[in-house]
Length: 89
Image (cartoon, rainbow, N blue to C red; front, side):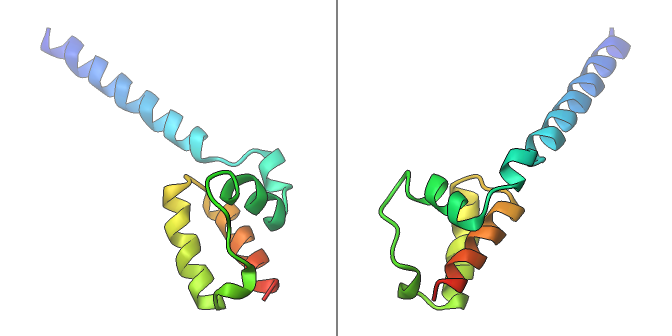
């Protein structure tokens, strides 16, 4: 019985790991989007976004890292958004 429970636990952990890895991979459709597109689709759906000129490049980087977690964005997505906002300054 103990052996069966161990096998089940290992199987569950393996499946969760596989789902986590696949869930974090950005699709080619998302990878092809610009920072402006990602900003419009993600940031503006929850709140009125401030003007890119309202914050410095360093502030946008901090805001971006915070919103990465809050909006469940990938590292690639948030990098594109931050670069867009910094270039619009």
